[in-house]
Image (cartoon, rainbow, N blue to C red; front, side, top):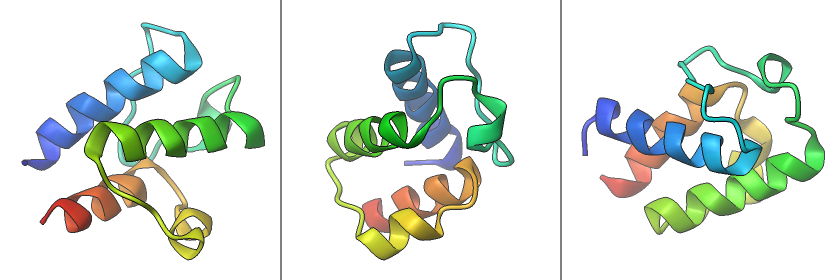
Length: 80
């Protein structure tokens, strides 16, 4: 799966989780950029990503994600 394909799916997940069809994430997107992205929604987002891509993140990986690009890199590595 290409990085572009991963981002397409990630955008769908973000739009679902945050119930906002206008969201488009980039490598630099962080929780500060999305109004409703708090700690509870972060858990929902991680869970939705794991389901969408059929992967599991470790607690260390989750804590280490500084932006959406880091999340994409982890997803690509796990799918590889």
